[in-house]
Length: 604
Image (cartoon, rainbow, N blue to C red):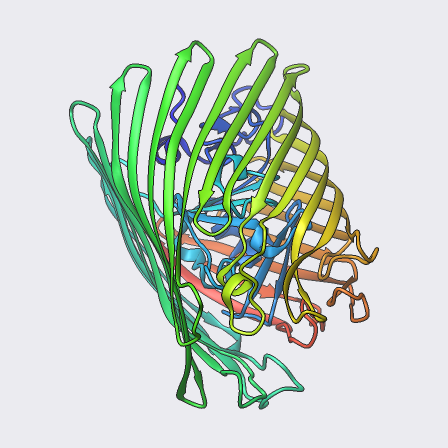
């Protein structure tokens, strides 16, 4: 039976085995397994969704300073930041809004119940084992928010073997310094990992025309742990946590807005998996997430926005017959708000029932999903998705899908004093997609064509001076992604062409560039490796009226590493080599040329 729980990611997720040269006889085709697209463990070649996997090997090779360094320029992905290092960050998947991308951490739903978006800027790259990016609607599986797609982050994990220590220390431009240590291992019955990291930087001046000229710093201390214990009868108990806290500073320029924030960003999950029969597994899990901020102005307390989410998920994975699999479950969560702002309501619940059906019919593969949500605020919503795949020949697979999705209004949309509107309806969407994937030996290529129609988009009505369901949008696009990997060369390239239009005005959606591209290329020379990334973006507009233009730009980042000894490695990177001035949000500075060095230890 195909395992469908998150344990599958722990047991099966693995980096691709790479041949030395493309025509090596013993080249292996073992591929990375993903579980986010349909909750079913499938290789990327098998899935009927557009998926990108970033594993731990790639994370260390790219040497990111921020989590968004891993995402920017990927197929269908675009980011915008109110400056660098811990500042407010938006992630646009296929041209949809930032709060239309669901962030999961080890299966835990993340995001602020007040603002709606996830706190991407607080995710620590050093605590991440792998990232799964699924583009396209997934509301029929995960519920609200997944209109544009899902990004699932898996924290560092342990595997069978004696405990092995890893550690790192680094620093660089802007008085950046970081350090961390961890241990991971396992026995026949128990896998475990525990790690701690700290990142701090003086940062850069966020805005030239606002506030002071001082640098606006950031620090983040993170703890991550995962454990799984299996009994002789196959029952497995599991738990995981990712906890981050710190401080980020920014320019205020006003006596009515803060200039510093203390944050907490956390995900916890625990539960049990039970093999009921040979063909039926059941899982019960409890989860908890926090997105909290205490805000200060010139050192004095200013405001608080703390949101917490408690979750429960009961899932059943059933093999009906050979190559026929069903997932059926019920989940529920409650959002709670604690704030110095007086919201009319400070809590609401959502209960959902979902099912996924997967059928293999020789060269054909069918998948369908259906979900019903009952929300305390807006009532019920039903969403569904249907996908079909055809294995045209051994390396080439075609796919097509259609799906609906929705996004629930946030507490700010509904209840914020002055402009909240409790009569708002959820935003809804319909998406059509055609795609193809070619994979053979060390090569792969993937192309997808899609259209998303968004209705009931929530926007601010200046006449009524409150949030309203006013806008409609149509988003069309083409995504191309390809790669090549051997033990000496690793490359990956992506290109996204996007037409994101507000149907009411004919304007482009704000901060969505018509063209984005990325190329990563690395070369291994025994102990020494060199590489680089080129990230390019065309012009876009900062505002809905398309009056404020954001210029296009291209960045070159270079990196190198040297294996000093089997357990020791030194890394160095230079970002924005040509010292380009650019903005992803109008008026917010981005770093110029910057260099960083890191020393790693990994016990063998």
